[in-house]
Image (cartoon, rainbow, N blue to C red; front, side, top):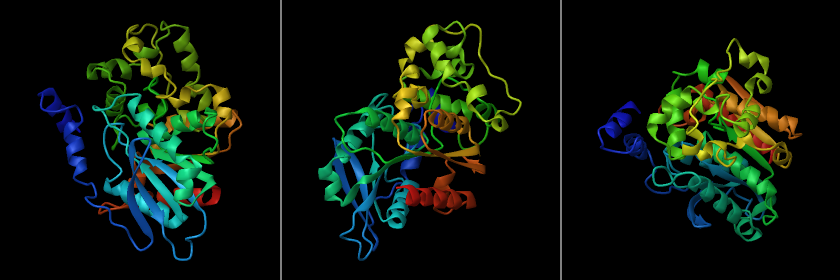
Length: 367
């Protein structure tokens, strides 16, 4: 990551260009169906996807579960063919007897907010039709939306929009969010302070990902980390937004520990003008109004103790519960950001296998 930033400073690439090139080497080069999972490519709403279909013997005539899956990577990295995501979707399709549709949205810098959101929304809208679901023998009443990290952000945002969209009669039954990024207003929540320098997602790097997504100048990192955009002199709209991410009220006391809120008296009045997406609910689902949250389906939220994004997920769980939505919080004391992806490959961790197993079990029980 640091080499990638050096390359950018030297004018050799985009901020995450080197990392993107390196990670793409882990992509699966050709689709490799197995005896139990058929893998094909398809386009929905003009968005390319990978479709993982369970082909379990004797199940051809039975309607299956459906999962729209959105990969992570800070809206900038990774793909549907990156090996951990590829293997994860195969495992989900096989163990759930499901059809898993992995959405390949545009990435920064080629796409900026709201491009990524729009891609996932359009793909989901086309998938949630009787025609498409019937083509893949998916039960219209058993479709989930799920994603991890930035993909969890997009999954939460699309779930909110789909719940309210009267032109989409078929709705998601559940949403499953894995260590999601849900707001960019407070970079000093207890988990951001506690895990500022914990791999694999350092606090300044998360701010850089947000700036990539929102098309902001990388030099604004320092201002974001100081919460200058949410200072007390930033006006009524910001004050209303701050109330929806007030971790002193939304976080269980055990997670607050001895940390203190960081709310400067004076900030940068131009920050929100430069980054209007900061207050856009499509970019920050945690800012949704309570009336919107009330319309959402039951949620599974995975959080990890050693993750800067831990409190985003926990605060969202509280807001959903207060709105009357049933929420399952699956918290891992030994978990770190991206841990589920370490269920595969040469660097397998026990936490990766355990979190994957529990995630799939919840979907099996609730979808």
